Length: 231
Image 1 (tube, rainbow, N blue to C red):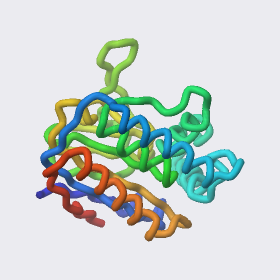
Image 2 (image 1 turned 180 degrees about the vertical axis):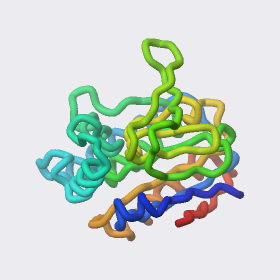
Image 3 (image 1 turned 90 degrees about the horizontal axis):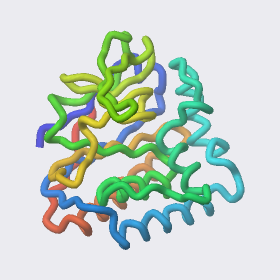
Image 4 (image 1 turned 135 degrees about the horizontal axis):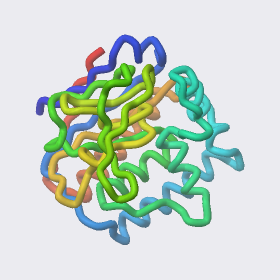
């Protein structure tokens, strides 16, 4: 297992309380959303409601910290919400959480239950290690617009996640590109659980343990290991 996530000095300076947990998994079994994965999402929404106790997601101290970081690199957090806040808002709405595919349902359930950003990437589509850094503005982010492939460029200074081929996620964890998403053909993946102070590191560890157990349950025989975080 060779995956690594490098966190640049500029990102560390922006968010000194950032302590990601990265899980690498091989031998995954993915497929369409199921009754079991749907039940996990419903349970996560219930856990979130208990955690918030009537508050809006952005009023949670962890989400407040993410909003402050987003503002610090120039994003408008009420318009471009971090992935956990965006999911939480959907979880509490009448429409509820989306059902994407089995693996995405699993990590979305953990994200909502713990109110922390969690992402998943297809390792076979990642080129080299992944890096969290501040953009120059020249990088390419390949996305889809009006059903067609389109290339965007991040704003100078925004936090991006990228590999050797280009940007995989804009504004830290706001919008993932299609190239490295987990699909029903994914067999190897990497999962990033991202927390900031004041969220206790122990909570992030519990979230990582829960995700690991879910991956083992839904993909019998999967090989899981903690990946390296550099920087």
